[in-house]
Length: 274
Image (cartoon, rainbow, N blue to C red; front, side):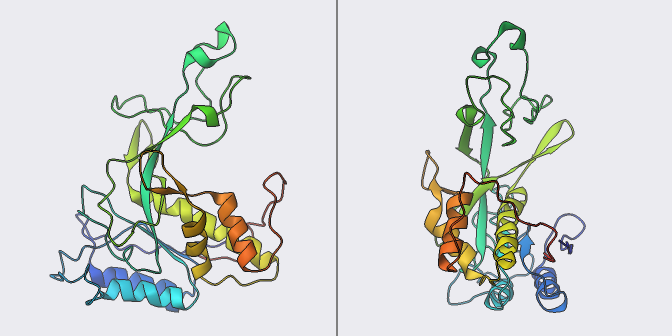
C-alpha cells in the first residue's frame, strides 16, 4: 500500500479552489491513485465564487472530483465543520463523492460495571481518555477493551451526533464517522479526521475484491454505504455498517458473501495507492 500526500492549505489556514483542483488533478492524472481522501474543503469565499451550491453552476472543484470518480477512482471528502462553513463544502457536494460528516463515540465505562472491587479504578486500557479538557467525554477507541467479564465494550459505547457538523445540503453528507483525534493531552475535532475512516473501509474492500479477481467500479462503494448505513438514534444521520456494506459490494460483483464470523483477512500489502 502506498500513500501520496498533497498539501492544499495556505499559511493561515485558507484553502483556495485552484489548489484543491491541482491536488485532485495530481492524484487523478499524474499519480493515477486508486482512491482519493480529501480532508479539506472549499466554500469559495476566498475566490469570489458564489455559485458553488447551485446545481446550475457546478464548480470546478466538484467537476475535478467527478472526473476522478468517472475514471474509476473513489473520492471520499470531509463535509466540513461548522466553525469554518455553514453548510457542506466542496468537493463533498459532488453527487458522486462520498461525503463524510462526524459523530462522537463516547466511552460509557463506569466503575460500577466492573466485576470486582479491585478493578473499580481500572479504566479501559485502549480507550482514549482526555484528562485535560473537562468538556470532552472519554472517547471510545473501538478496540473492545472493556476490562470486565460480564459486559462488552459495545454495551458501554454510546454514539452521539457531533455538534460541529455543518448543515446538510442535497442529502449530503452521505455517512458519519468518528470525528475525534487524540493529540497528546487533548482531542482535535473535525470531519477531516472522519473521512479517513471511510477511506480505509473503501481501500480495504478494494484490496479484497481485487484479490478475488474483480475490479470494483468507483460508484459501488457509495452505493454500498447508501444502501446499508444504519440510522443514528438521535436523528436521520447514517453510520457505517462495515460488514453489511462489504456484503453489498460482494453481491454487486457476484462474489461470495463474506461471513462476519470468519477470520478472513485481506492482504494490505497489495499495490493500492491513495
